Amino acid sequence: MFDVLVYLYENYGALHACPDADSLSKRLTDAGFEDEEISEALAWLSGLQLVTSESVAVGPESERAFRVYAEIEFERLGSEAIGFLSFLEQAAQLTPTQREIVIERALATDEAPISLEMLKVIVLMVLWSQQADIDVLLLEELLGAGDHKNLH
Image (cartoon, rainbow, N blue to C red; front, side):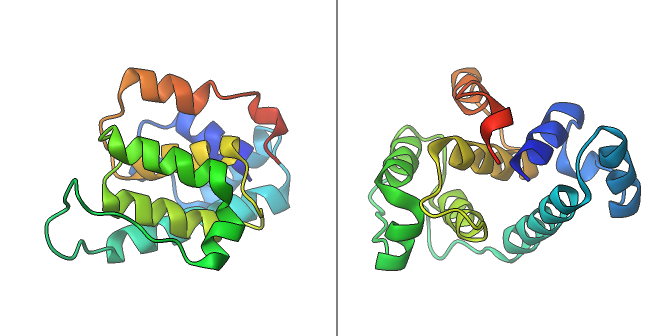
């Protein structure tokens, strides 16, 4: 699934620039992706669009806000992923609302704990879906974090 997401990022300027699900599925099949992988990625993206459209920041997003992780979140995410999310937020590369969307989408995968490489793809997809400006160094970190062929 994550290979499909990276492919979409690399081949489409924005999430809304992707064709409808049927056309996109055909293009992904033509690009060599398996049907199951395509279905998982499209379902995950649909969930991303839904959670993004339904996300509402309660009150102003503050530098002093902090996140307490539930035990199940800590188990599913792992300390490395949580540390990376904290780093991104402290570096003002991720808002608290974006962090929550990343957490929700990470928990929507079957991975436990999620690898740092997979989390980076999720962060990239969340920022991409929101058409957020991505710092060049952050983009290199998110895309250059390893061989994407080893993500699945």
